[in-house]
Image 1: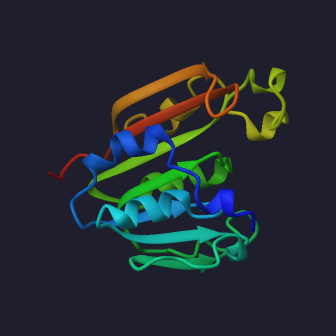
Image 2: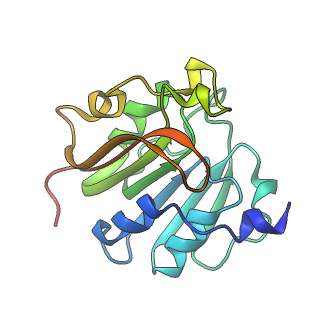
Image 3: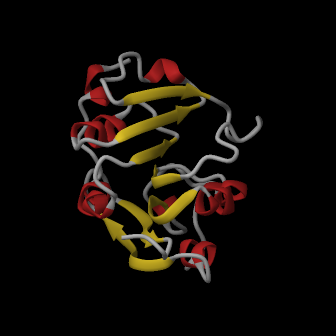
Length: 175
């Protein structure tokens, strides 16, 4: 694994909303890749369950991180019945998982989601519509289930030009 992947800073969106997660809470990092968010969140004192199809991308999880290898698209959901204080997703979209992720939150739990949106094809990959959110799609995925704290649908220039949607939403009933 290139060392720069393991040393990448967390997404500013994830870092911004991490303060809403219950102190010491359990966080699910979906499609964790090299573990930039899992490392960041563990350093903040959270217990992190990091899942990816290729756990070899994250060879040395730090203390506070449990690494799970699972194919979230072809295999069964590896966390059936479990609830988390937060679910973090960055640069990953598998639409059938959206309701599962929402249902995986404890009362008071936070969903922090950021990925590519339609319009990204003009900047490069991903360009396949299967991997690009439609306008308002993240909002629709949580409508009636979570309270939206923040939502953006925009073009960013850092770390590279991209069209993205990002959302922070909370399941009511917690502190």
